[in-house]
Length: 434
Image (tube, rainbow, N blue to C red; front, side, top):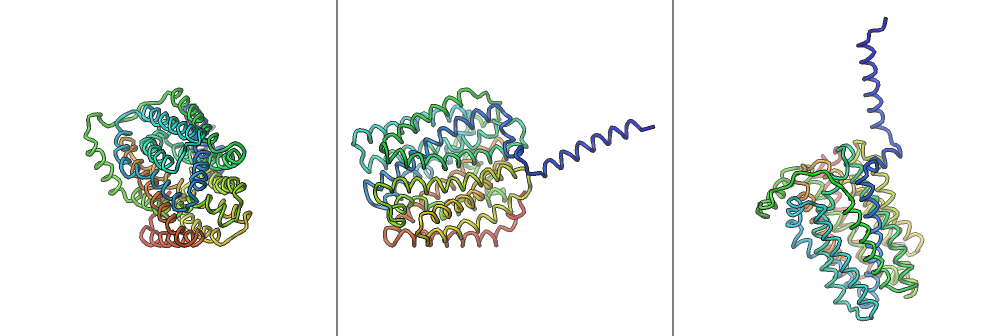
């Protein structure tokens, strides 16, 4: 006779074994685990459309700025103007994101970005646009993005009901961003060449309707918020103290700073690269600029999907470490090739390797932070990530203006390799992060 208790125990044991095996498997089901939640599906669709428009504007704006000024340094100025609000307001924005509903905050920021896109479109349609207009609008857009970023990063936690799927949701957010990076610039290059930049800005303005509608439709579970009457400085200090004392989060934020400063700044030079390094004509330059941006986005998208697929595995630290070495080495190769086809291949590989670092750092930070501090920690993360990028863009733009674009990229890649070496030596625990 079979003992009932023994049979029951075996069944439970069997289920647990199957769950454990499932957690170790790599399958398409794991890639899209967060999609089972309606709020996440609504968010993903709306944000994807909006980001597609955003990348159309980024690509068209960069090439328009270069056409108006013929200056690689000015491309750095635009990126720097966009990044100034990050340094001025990001920590305060994180405190706000922990004190007011994040959905409400994002409705305001996304609406502001829509208005700015339409203003740039109007200036360009009428032929009134000047370089200083681009700088001012980049600064204002930077303010809106600064308040949007910590709220957007913190909101992901409310889109999934099971915390086990939070790493997958964060990783899929990266794939959404990079899908737009892959498609938006190529579309911008084609529309710019056929219809002019103003239509790129108009399409971006219209794309914000999708994300505003998505935010309005979502019904989110409440999360703990800080008291509204809390002194913002108290909240900021609390967030900074938490990051400083949390060794793993501190290491990840340091790494994202190095990557943003030296690994992403070369993107500011892509419009000039298309014309001066790959010797495109003025007519084809907009198309090549879009293709370079899109190739980087395709590589980044493949990396983001790979991260979503393995987000349940405990190998993230090793993959991040691999990425810190891989992207600067590939960037060095990109700096010396003069074939458009090889440049497209290598910039796609740079996109792949750099996203291994960027997305997994975000996954690891969001997996470890406490809910009540999520907005402020996301603000510190965003401050370092978005704050270093314009400084790197400004420096590489100046250096390219004084020397050459290829030499500027070589120096940036070597600096990234030096940073990778320091992190390898000083932060060995990174390689062991799950």
